[in-house]
Image (cartoon, rainbow, N blue to C red; front, side, top):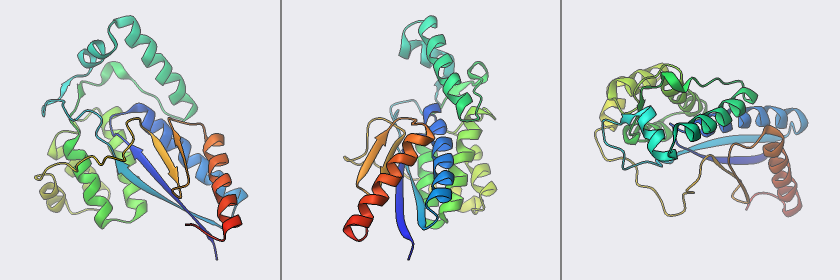
Length: 218
């Protein structure tokens, strides 16, 4: 029987480090399949709204980061750091063209809706498309029409997706990490931050080795 590896990933959908981390995880899982072909790796996505106090209509992107980091120089340095890391993950961020830092309550409601109804593959596609909508297409993740378009592109019923956004956003649980991305492997080991693929791969192989020693996951 294949060894099961569950990877719980905590992300916020407007965090560039989370998209970088997702891409690195994809590379690491691909490498794992090559070196450990008997492992069945399943990724579970968990949305974490880090900025729940943002106004419903969002805030201008540039103004948000200027206030958050304190000076144009600090913003430039941070964005250069992110862009360098993104390059390693095959991504490019043009922060100058992103108009809005949105409130993601509706987006997290949509992700929770997808988790209850969709395959893991559909969920993974949705996470990717939500990142793309914000960072590439520069669409507002706080708008229902944006999210409906993403939902339909991932195979969900558009009207059902709209209905799920009418309720309150999922409540943040006490055990949810404050920093994202955050990776948990079979509940045994965890990593924080946009770790490179080799670090993620090593963590996964270490957990697999522990499972073999004890005869399976706890």
